[in-house]
Image (cartoon, rainbow over all chains, first blue to last red; front, side, top):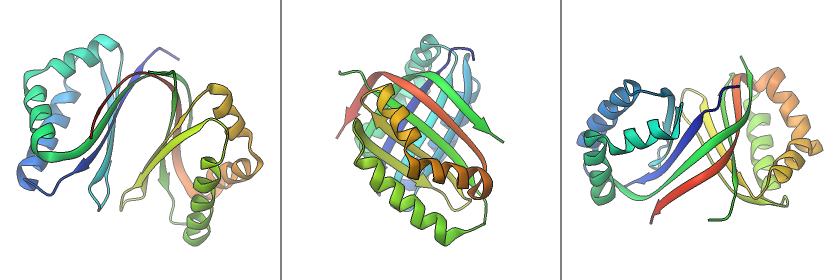
Length: 101
Length: 101
């Protein structure tokens, strides 16, 4: 297994600004996929507005570059101010994996 | 930050055996919470049957003990055979975290 990293983002949506949020969320997901070192992304939000997004990256540098991306920075700011009542980010190194297809 | 670990479990449910699955899923969640080294657990499944569960643990030993738990082993077997068409498990070391409450 090659070394890779996971960013776990959990968040509780407020009820503000749904349309803009959805638009920005889709745009950011598409943009993330074009970044150097991006591997894949999985995202779910339930009916109570609690969401988990996990993105996988080849290096910590790739994660830092994505964090610093200007479109992403603007979204992070809106997230803090308006979209999320609470969130957590964890940067993780994947040690082992098991798959069944 | 104390060292801790995350187990990311992503899965696609089949349409089989919903009632038994729900019962076992609830039971396992309660049981996980009583295990030594357990920190917390977050779980979402969407309307298409795709789910993400993240459990956090104090050590790799705690994760191994939970993997080996006999009730959990029985559930893992049912998961492979019946409940999931596809799943992934990643064992991760949390390197950094950011929170906003």
